[in-house]
Image (cartoon, rainbow, N blue to C red; front, side):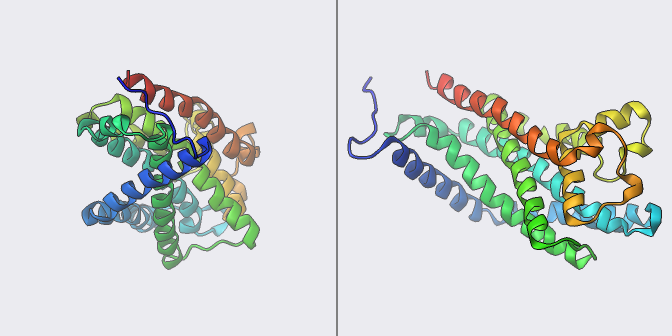
Length: 273
């Protein structure tokens, strides 16, 4: 078997970046040619905003007379970023099942480009999802009550969470079958529900509240609420995770990437042998 090597005139980094963009462009074109997937992906978070903001939210009373939809939206932003892992798993598993991944392996291209390109395309998709959800939030009365820098920092934390979940999705997508990939939504629901997305952990039973407070999603939600100026002081909590949400909102994604990025790359290379 002939060993494929990088072109002699191209640096290794440039080779990886060029091929990664080629793979990312392929994934983005494939995504835009499936309007049903686009509509469904954008409609899902909008449906959640309307369902929880107006149906369940009509029964919610925020201490101090705050607006529940303003409290809710940072949680919806973060939940959408977390749910994005299911899309990554499905896309990677589909490419694997249909032989696309094997064809990439047989081509004279930088092998890391396959997973790097996938992560790039998913981040671009997530920016669009987040933009649509922000627009929906503005229509239902949400707004950022902070300055430009805190607001941009909050969006950066949301995309950082999504970036971490991409590598979880790539790794799991390389392991599970295409059929099993469709069930990942059910597995993500408990993780997103046992958090501070909809209610404060302080209102939950103590044991469940502790789990919710240490949920990586809760850290991002609490940090973005603070940065957006949407916090309700009575619901912040006095535990260590609640008081150090910004630190955990950075630490959790970094740890997740440190664990799953090497696992995803190793799984991709081991499957090629």
